[in-house]
Image (tube, rainbow, N blue to C red):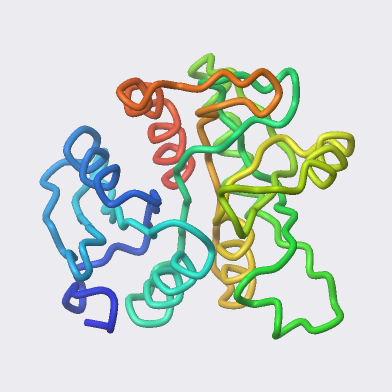
Length: 234
């Protein structure tokens, strides 16, 4: 076990889906995973391991924001041998054609800073998804008939943003959506030579102001979970 993950050696699968919310991790485990076993509850950040269509998979909560995700992703990769990490979560749409309930597959992620920024110093490193995962996820979404967008997103350091000028420029330059974790996940994947992808459900729109009620979010996230699982084991 590690400081933040209480799983024993061998209890974490090589493929890990990472929702931010630990209760969403439990929901995914209960609704999509067979023989799901609770393998982590340290600090209330739940993790489950089971199988999907015979493939071993772990669902591990990451918490909110890049610093929290960085802790869990580092430990999953370094200490438990995770090889494929897919963030599954919500995002805010930033384009007129990106609607609530759509799925966004992040090809790359723009950010002001990440926990890894100090390592790069003056370099503006461009974190990107694993192409194999991205391609497989897009194929899975197309086969399911899910409205899906592929492109760049923005990983923010803050939830309550007060930079409308920055949002305006990102929208102008085609950024699809905003969330808070993907950029650091992609950087860590590059550092350790593993695969990573962020598959996101649009829960609200920064353009129209429309938002999913909390009770409807889990139902709308089902497509995203299935897409992530199909991409991981394609």
